[in-house]
Image (cartoon, rainbow, N blue to C red; front, top):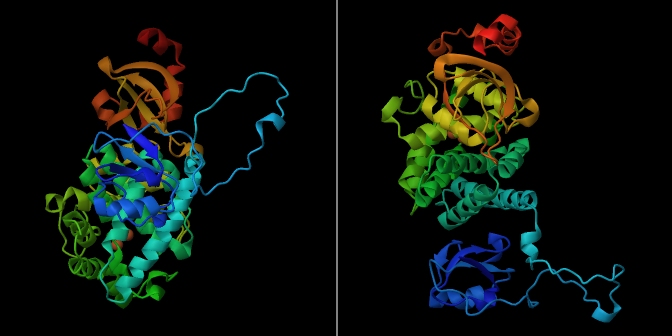
Amino acid sequence: MLHSIPPSDVRAGMYVAKFGGSWLDHPFWFSRFVVKPADVARINQAKIPAVVIDDEKGIGPDRPQPPKPKAAEPVRIAVVPKASRPNPTGQPKRRGPVIEPWRRKSDRERAQALVAESLVTMRRACSDVRLGRAVRMPQITGLVDEVIDMVERTPRTLLDILRLKKKDEYTYLHSVAVCTLMVNVARHLGRSEAEVRDYGMAGLLHDIGKMGVEDTILNKPGSLNDDEMERVRHHPEFGHAMLLKTANVPEMALDVCLHHHERVDGKGYPHKLAGDELTEAARLGAICDVYDALTSNRAYKSAWSPAEAVSAMWRWHGQFDQELLFAFMQAMGVFPPGLLVELRSGRLGIVLDNAKRNSRPLLLNFLSVEGASRIEPEEIVIDDEFASDAIVRIAAPEEFGLTMQDCRPDAIREVWSDPVLQAAEG
Ligand SMILES: [Fe+2]
Ligand SMILES: [Fe+2]
């Protein structure tokens, strides 16, 4: 069970599940660990509003926590004496739950604060690499933990904010976006907590080698000449060499850094690896990397919508692992319009263009998979919050004796409006 307690009440043997407030405000690089005696004084003195401890992984709080005011509370509220408080209703006042000030922030505000912090961290990391220094891994780990926490709360809020990054922030926030996308899809695939963290680290560090390429080339509005292209194509190997010099870099991060520009058809770089020669992490890294690049404003192009991006990626046969791309689409809740899909409920539907609600696929269902019988066309939104239904696989029209022409929304509606067919299908 989780308990939110003041920093002054933390003792050795407790398991810290999270620090309240910003991770920049506490002296620890990790936000989940068992408190050692040497840590106690530093936590007790930290200028943070609360510490969340998990009594299933460590000892519990000494006593129930009364809602007492703390000296370190960042928000001070003037207290009006009870007798002078107006109470126009005359009814006894209801007591609500006591909510710490840091919990009052909306998810959007917390995500915005995280993006601002991550910009600082990535600027520092990139500057270190430009100067030939090793990456400061504790800061990177702390940032990945924050991203994981935010993805658990609300992945789309963080991704929506990261997608709006300015052109001059792209170099830094692209890495944070790829980290977030990797964490999101790893969680969807049911990976362990440790693996999810490795995926996040791999996303955050994948382009660190770009610090070996001049900004004028990285931000050039026009197309690159052969020399410039060669310099850009060297960034996976340069980044990999930099990470090899750094302690505690997960194997997965080294692999994704080196191979995120490979393609499953073997036409990528630097090693032209194909299919199973590439690890799942490298194949996922390629998907997350290109998705964020397509959905961002760049010096040479405007941002595409998520649906436009996955549509193009689905059409680019040979570039991506299509099974993993489907898992990515499921994790994101974004599918290409026109895709024929089977639902958990046993219905077959076509994905409609849903530009207004990018993160909620809109479908036109028209067939019952069992017996391939037509049903009255029905538009539904797949909303994962209520788990009403889910897209479980991509179907081919031929499986049901149909052509792609038959699966066009206007053709589906026209066929159903035929009274003879309605009578035949019941
Ligand atoms: Fe790259
Ligand atoms: Fe990238």
